[in-house]
Image (cartoon, rainbow, N blue to C red; front, top):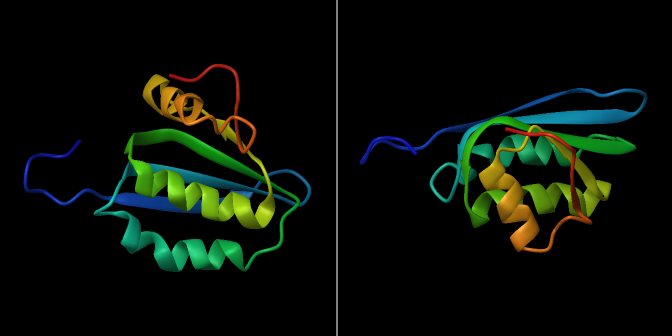
Length: 110
């Protein structure tokens, strides 16, 4: 996490992933304080058309329930997503919440 008192920062980048798919790369710290700054990007993603979604979480350092809520909001529109490059902590959060059918964890990780 960031230094005490410093705001956390998160970002999302969207790119094409194969025919009809999208990759959403999430970076930084996706938490209660940074989630509101991503609302316009999430709304933009929800307006796109895609047959599949991949979340690349390789550069995500931290995620709390606000981050999970954002991912699930996207999954609610596009269906189950594949999660690539999750850290062991992110992997544990998804597994402990029982979300593996909605957020399918790719093998490997960090």
